[in-house]
Length: 220
Image (cartoon, rainbow, N blue to C red; front, side, top):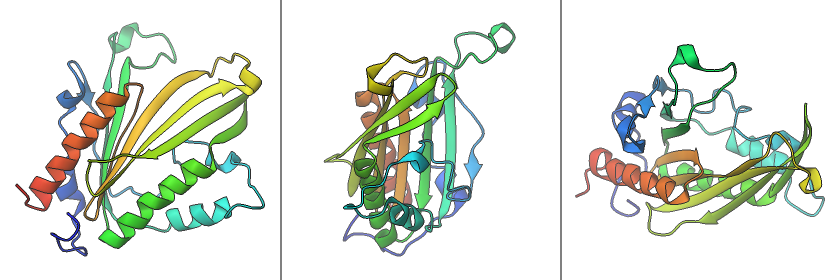
């Protein structure tokens, strides 16, 4: 949308909600949950990763500076988490999670802010490549990776996180790599993840990006 759409155009919570992908997009038997409107950056500490434990390097730009700027952004938003359960609710064990879970979100802001916001996400993932923190079962380490993703929207990032025990020691918190894609289309930031199938996450993000371009910006 760069160069073809009004860079200052904004969309409402309700407009964004209509452009979320139907839950069946993510697979057979996947059910969409409640759509959350207008909650972008209202609780900036809840970012899904333990960024507060990111160790600082005296020679690097302060992590706190990235975070202060990142959480300062505001915009209309819509978010929904879709899940697939293998068992009905009355037959699940306590604490048993779903077979599959994927969260999608759309945020609207001026294009210049959206561009910077995406760059800040890249800075944080790059800076916090390994984050160590304490759990009830011992030390755990988040391994974060980020790379630019070409051919999706005006700009896109492929982010991933895996969890291991400290020094490779097996931990009950170990998890395989899960992927999230964040895409900028004009002044809309869309996010899909996290999920262990990289190709699916990229495909879902491309589908959302196409819908944003067509339905919000009116492209063919």
